Image (cartoon, rainbow, N blue to C red):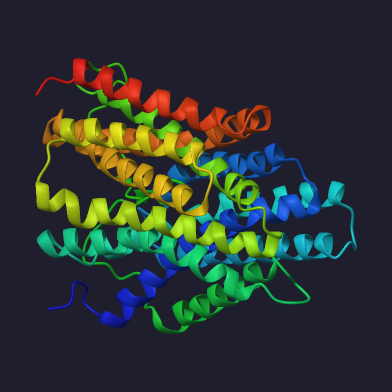
Length: 417
């Protein structure tokens, strides 16, 4: 039996999530090289993505609430339209800047506007998709369908950076992939309008608040809180240690992802177009390691949340330090893959630990907190890491390694077996 009532409908919903995740991570992989070619300070490139993350975190709960009502297909359309508009605005201004038609000083403000469009409107699609699925499935079928939908974000983090270099062509250059992803999204939007029936759900379902999509992470949001659900305090002793672990480790992960592209460019010494291929390889290795951890190793070893956090923090710390100290492409790729493997353990560990700490009636509340923790990490950490990188290249990697290894020691003392 199919996970969903119709394979065609499920494929459409999967494509909506996949195109958003792959397009966003493709742009993230391209921007270090584009910023260098435009002579935009690395810090401002990171800030542009931080501002987009702020908009996503602020608006995602609103769209999740709207997805609780009828009109989920309309929200999917809105999210795709926002994605397409963002890609076209960013792609156009970057292409003109790369060709010298407009100055870099003008490129950046317009690029920020384009990214803001994605943060504001793009966050409408994921909760609408998940609410659409949840309202048409029940029991184990719902769990399996939502898990499959959520995996599209993880798959997108591999596909985006992998295929982006294939679409670097004249006269658009490094901006070419943005137009290609806008075209792909337009095809998905047309199929959605023509082939996906409007809302006639079997039952009500809450929309999922989905964290900001980023490289090398699997994203799974939490349900928005129902009106009659108990409130859960952030200072609740049952979940406070897990929230501290999530906040600290999440910032470490976001910091590493924010600076890795610049390190690859500087260590490769290759022309920017060629360096982009190196970035793609490194990011694919990291995303693949994350998926290996979450899709294969965690189910096989059946580790407890405490074990996942301890092993995850340790591997992430060692891998991040190895990444910062690596002098060649092989060592850099291997170090980043090891760090990503660690973060692949860490995230499910902190998520499941927080979930197991509370009762069944508080699951939606704690899931919302977990999603907030995951999303907030991408607001300031990437920009802070790039600022440290501009002072000294190894500095952000040493800082993240120290944070993760220190967190492992603290968690081992704080979280009892």
